[in-house]
Image (tube, rainbow, N blue to C red; front, side):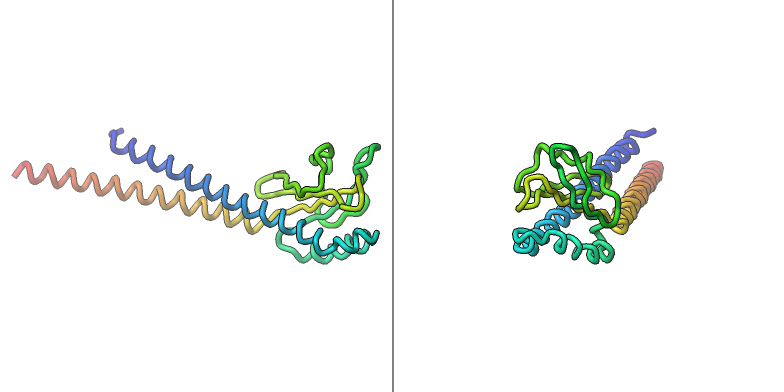
Length: 181
């Protein structure tokens, strides 16, 4: 294989890895931001009801959001008391509570990546020391868009690389033709 062809392959692979990594970082940041903002907004909107002790009504309002949302796929109110993790109310997709670090529960919102563009956003309920609200986020459409975009970029790099190689071959043939005459 010629050194020019190897050079094109290396540049194409390096560029593909950089672009695909950037796309992953962009899509992952998007789903993390949606997770954080959704839980933060829910806590702000329902803060008064939660502090008054109306946690059940605040939680059940989310059932409609879970079933109509593109990103919010599951919702759990759990009790992380000394006895362990107890799921009290759950809607939508099953959430694995064992992935949540109960020792790190504080007043902040935590976002945990659990898969490709799948996250859990969780926070401690302000009026309780052991109750935790967990949202599960995932989008099949976002995953499809990512994979389709990756395939398009790979196809374009193969196409442009083969075009560059073909152009170099044509110029080298013309150079030989001019030298012989």
